[in-house]
Amino acid sequence: MAPTTIPTIPIPIPTPAPAPIWWREAVVYQVYVPSFADSDGDGIGDLRGLTDRLDHLAGLGVDALWLTPFYPSPWADGGYDVSDYRDVDPRHGTLDDFRELVTRAHALDLKLIVDIVPNHCSDQHPWFVEALASPPGSRARDRFIFRDGQGPDGSLPPADWQSKFGGGAWTRVPDGQWYMHIFSAEQPDLNWENAEVLADFQDTLRFWLDLGVDGFRVDVAHGLRKDLAPPLRNTNGRDSAPLNSPPQGTDHPFWDRDEVHEIYRAWRKIIDTYDPPRIAVAEAGVSAARLPLYTRPDELHQAFNFFFLRCPWTADDLRQVINTSLTDAHLVGTLPTWVLSNHDVVRHRSRYGLPQGTDLTKWLATDGTAPTPDDTQGRTRARAAALLTLALPGSAYLYQGEELGLPEVADLPPHALRDPMWERTGHTLKGRDGCRVPLPWTRSGPSYGFGPSGSWLPQPDNWGDHAVQAQQGRPGSFLELYRTALTLRRRFRGDETFAWLHSHDGGLAFRKGGLECRVNLSARPLPLPTATPVLLASGPLEDGTLAPDTAVWTASAHP
Ligand code: NOJ
Ligand code: MG
Image (tube, rainbow, N blue to C red; front, side, top):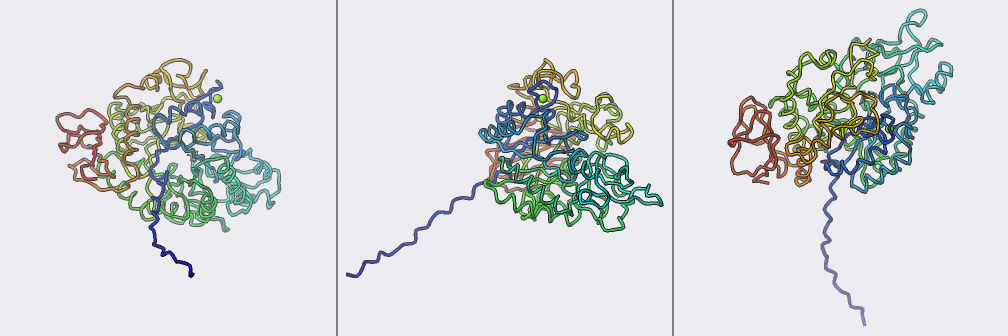
């Protein structure tokens, strides 16, 4: 008998919905490791201190942590001068502490992003020590950018390039050659045309990925490649812009060169071999037109949005920045990031209390007294800005302490300052220490609960008023605003659709998925649409109006 053939009916196999990509709408909390929590009483934050406080971060509702450098470092620039890329500095702990941190973070469903500092290393890195001990033209020197000087005796620097921290970008060594450093002299720039440098950083990526990290924040991502063709070109003053501002003009000899993208294409191939997906976020101070190049589908995943950070507090400026950020990110298939503060800028609670256009470096030089920030305005705007930031499609990067509404500590005494900018500018620029003061956890006690004893930067007398303990469970506190916002935000995650809604002059109104956000940036109350239940507001809502400098979230009637 002929075998019966059973007709096969094609059964549609449901395609599983693609797993949401965790980073597209993640809230990433930046941990400035030296100032987060100190477990051993040396006054410096450490990995164990962080691990002990992970419950707090999970309870706050963030999705991921970005850790600033904790690698062995002589600390010429707060850890951004790395002397060993694959270890932990003893002042922050051990590799075992790091393993424990990864395990505990993942158990709490928190992702971990680490900083990678590829543009330069420390002058104590074995490579640089070897370079100094080796003759000009040697293989050891080729890992860096050594050149002969100009002038008959070579006593003039090879080019006019300036350091971001003040002074020239070239330092002379005893045998007469000069080496290049975009930052301090203790941070020699690496030569990214050198194959050994390329290979070594790829090993470093794999090292941390194998330890379980979920991604990297790429320091100075736009600086790695230089135009080294002889004779070196002068910048003619085109490098005086502040940290992370775009370079002036095009074809700069060391900023934002096209060749830099080859590096990220190679990195992306490595990152993509890991599952679940890992990410890389670029710190690139480039123009809006050039930023999307860093997040092309075969390069890095995200880039910090410094345009949003620097945006004046007006509806028109913000609308424009939001539009450009969304459009540019969409061009390359990603979403923008939204950032208000980090460890390099004056904390936004203080910024928003200052008149528009205040020169912040000059303001810091007056110890924050001229002008005196309007603290009520700073506080109100910072709360509204938090709801604006957390409602936009994309990921939000929060800087530790903004959830406590911390102000800048602008009056740190000169003897306490650690930022290399202070010395390199001949004591004219105070630098960035005022946003790095260790966190207050308790109302009182040594270092307000930061650790069992003191803290490496002095904390102000009223620091305990901002402490976690003082804000926890207190309705109307910054901490509770952030916690509620982060919980609500999760309900609206996954739907990236964005649309502007009608708003009155001086207001912003938009819908992101099922969430509507309205912000009043004008000086008078604006009417609120009726009949939409309020989910959260950054300040009191009276008589159906939205007060100046206030934001409100409602559930969209038309999701
Ligand atoms: C950017 C970092 O955020 C900053 O803190 C550091 O000083 C420079 N890059 C140099 O690494
Ligand atoms: Mg410690």
